[in-house]
Image (cartoon, rainbow, N blue to C red; front, side, top):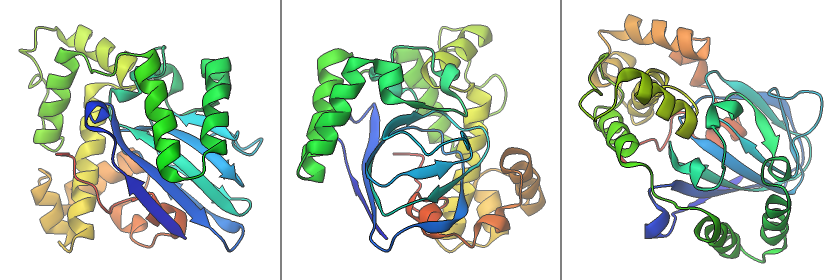
Length: 269
C-alpha cells in the first residue's frame, strides 16, 4: 500500500493539515480495521474503488464525501482496488468550505454533492479528472480560495493553540480569558470544530501518548509525558474514548497504519 502526504500552501495552512493519497494495487482488503478519532474532519475522493464504513454499513462510501469529527472509532475496509485522495482539515478549518454547524456531521459521513450541491459535484469532477496529486491539490485549494474565508476565528484559534501547546492536558476553565464565557466557547467549538473543547482535549491527549509510544517510549513514559497520572490512567481514558486499551491498537492493518493511528502525530503543528 502506498501512502503519501502533501502540505498545503502557506495561506491555507491554518485550515488544512495535509492532503493525502492512498493507493493499493493488490485488490480488496477483507478485514475491517479501526480508524480512531484524531480531531480532524476529512474530505475524501475515491478515484478508483471505494471503502465500506461502519458509519453507514448499508452501502459503500460515495465517490466523494466528508467524514465528520469522530468521538469513537469506526471500521473501514477496502472493497476493491484503492486509489483515494483526501483533505485533512485542521480543527476549525473545515468551515472554510462547509457552510453549516459542523456538529451536524459528527460521527457521520455525507456525500460531497449532498453538502455542497453543484459546487461539490464540480469539485469532485475536477479532482477525479486531474492527472497528478499536485493537480488535485490545486483544484481543492482553488475552491477554498474561491468560495470561503479560510481564516479561523481569533478566539477559536487562541483556544486551539492553547489545547495543542499543552497537548490536550488542560483542566476545566483553563480556556477562559479569551473574551468568551464557557457556553459561548462550547457553541463556537460545536459549530466550527464539530465537538466541544473537552472532547478535543481528550482526543489530542490520547494521540499525544500514542505518538510517544510509537516513537519508542514505553506506555508508562508515554502516559506521563501526555499528562496522565500513570499508565492505568491512560488505559482508563483510552477505554472511555476508544472502547479498548491502548495496546489494542498496536497491531495495525495496512489501512489503519496508513492513516496513522499513532504514527506521525504532532499536536504542536
